Length: 400
Ligand SMILES: [Zn+2]
Picture 1 (tube, rainbow, N blue to C red):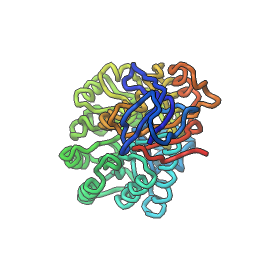
Picture 2 (picture 1 turned 135 degrees about the horizontal axis):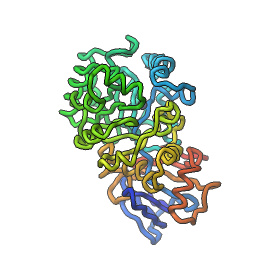
Picture 3 (picture 1 turned 45 degrees about the vertical axis):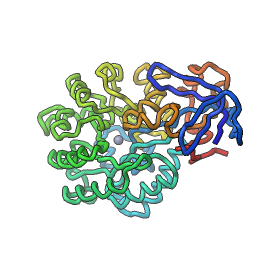
Picture 4 (picture 1 turned 135 degrees about the vertical axis):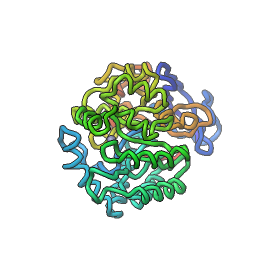
């Protein structure tokens, strides 16, 4: 496949590249960029710009129906909306219908890789992986594991969890569909549960994902229950290592940032969700100063957008970050957080051809400076600007 367009990427937090010409894709990978028109049929996207596909590093498949349903307290939100909705996913048919909706929404939003909290049962997660493959999205996902303080129907025993984790890992363990150990958080999992399941995950080098320090009341509750800080609780359970993705981190203390940094764990910043639940504002400068890699997440449904673009705008309102840093977090930074920086996230030769075709109509002029384009896209863009989405050179969405 040969594509003609203007290609912009952000391979580092300080660096952006801008190239106008032809991209040659072979076997789903980026083979070459060239100024001269190559032989063969050209797909003409010269009225658009092309960027690496967006990496959404924190979102919930089970909550797509809950977006924009008003609430202010995390615990009330979980009780009133989230748990009843997650119970509906015990029905495999419902899980299939919602998965179709969810993955198509992400594809339409220019997301090419998503890190997902799935339904609580392995059968529904297995079905969701199959649908993600059908839609074409790169997916890192696990069943949302809980063994206490939640409705009985959503809990799982240690024995069953261990069996299911291994079965799902053995089946879904490649560049397109990758199982991740998904522990909801320290208040719905016992220490023993977190510890033993993490051992299984780390032995296999799995991604581990969980929530940390989203709201003050939650942080206090963790302190009251465990007598130590949030990061310590996870560290003692053996959950923190280079493949761990921690969502939020709004109220982390310096000592916790030190510990997270020392272990090499990453943070998924979800500013839209934090604004919605009035959870507070994550201090990105401090977290970056500790040498922690930060990516972004839509966090559907506390986040109200399926698109990463409004999340970047909210990231700016939370902390004044440079647009290049914002797009880096949404692409290459996300790739680092999911340990795929040698495969996706920028336009390096040999990487997968995961990219998004962006329509700048009503936003910017196609021949503006690249920084102006990124800035206008960040402050005014959303899913309506996505013309097409490609994963490994395959078109998974195109707007008419
Ligand atoms: Zn979440």
